[in-house]
Amino acid sequence: MRYFAAHRVWIWNRNEMLGICRVGVDDETRCVKSVEPFDGEVERTEWLGGLIAVAPGCPPRFEGEPFARYKARALSEWSSVEADSSPLYAYHFSSFDVSSMEFHPSARIVRL
Image (cartoon, rainbow, N blue to C red; front, side):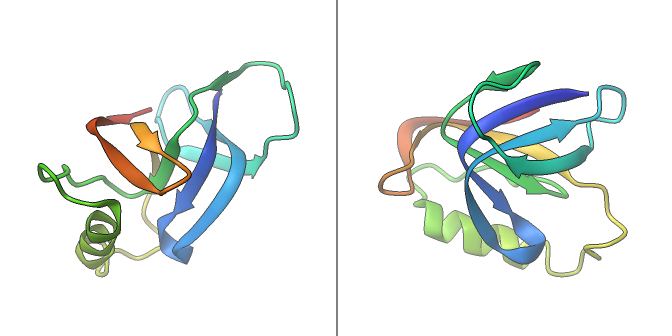
């Protein structure tokens, strides 16, 4: 199991934005196994900062697309996915401004 922490974690099936959490990802399947509060220095946890999305997939971001529009589009694409039966994966949104909840121009989305 690998652990990643960030300022914000967005859990798509609850459309919930959590603050300062750690996400546990299975080494073999790369599926998310846990999301828990990050209470200081924890062994085997890589601090990434920014935003991590926990979702069944992650659509590419359109150039110049604001986060609110990206989020609405992603939720629309995932509306047919069954939350309890689909594996969830973690995606790191690098170069993400947490205070304004907005992408930086150089933002990238990487599956963890």
